[in-house]
Image (cartoon, rainbow, N blue to C red; front, top):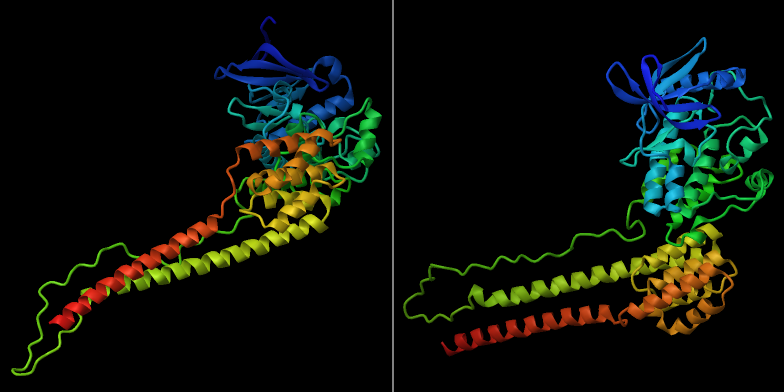
Length: 482
């Protein structure tokens, strides 16, 4: 386009267009800084509702100052001039990224969702409900920082409504059930529902509900079974899958209360090893400093005519002392290992009970927890084996994924997995069974590691005792000879 002026901005090129205006890349003449200018064309400004929403968007952006919300530099809504300037975000939108990549790794999803929660929480704390959270309204910088934009449909708690009661506004793929019904009054949890839809789409490459027309999609939001992202993306952490399912709850009261709470739970997902026992420092430590020999020790004088029996010197007791310390250390290590193994077995049994008796979401979480344990008991392997026959495909996938982490321990189930890979009706189950079989091919043969370590320790102690005893016996022979 030919350069045009909207003083003090030089409009360089059009970079976006929608129902709420046209966005231009522009140059601010005051400092030659490039910005984005959103202009409301005259024909759109003639609609009083659209004009009021444009003015509302400017009002909202002026009061929101946060790194994860696009920054507004001000504007005007006087006479025929209706525009405002905002920071230029040059990395495209999340919708563009999803169109290019299809799906995102779960680590990226958690990172992006954390930033989204930061921006939404700031807006909600200022009484602003966005009402149109979707991938197209999340701008990306080149450093992959998320910025929430387009507050044209936002509502402010302290101002007059622009949407009549019972009317629906928003984007159908991301609308909360209460937003579809137009009642009750929306809260920040409507934005959290949309956030759940966006997180689901980032993981799977598509929104949670799809249909041939808008009516089908809206009905699914109202009554369809909540889908699990982990069914399509087996590597998705089950805590993340559970959080998304809670965000997609039909009842707003069943969703997390605030964006801050969602952010806290996302941060927990990124913390590794939450199912494993804490590593404790060694209970027994042996000094490696060698004992220095006794030098210049004065001899005890003896009375004339009275023979003395030479006593056993301190150095001759040193091997015995070392052996005793080694023995105590080994006993302590054995006791600690035994206590740790007991706690692990207890924790393992608790997860087994949850896998057998809980709801589907908890069973999925339990299967993932069992996958993180060390060598599993034979009874646990059998329970997971039973899970591969469950009528729910998601449970079968989760059980197979857990067994795949213990491929060396369940080689005896190889024929079962071959059968599942060939005949199971669900493609995700067949794929996961194949993954387990591949893991078996590369897994080393199971060995009795604990017994090898224990035997080595006991052999070391025995050698120490023999060496110490031999040394003391030789010293006693010298004493007897003298």
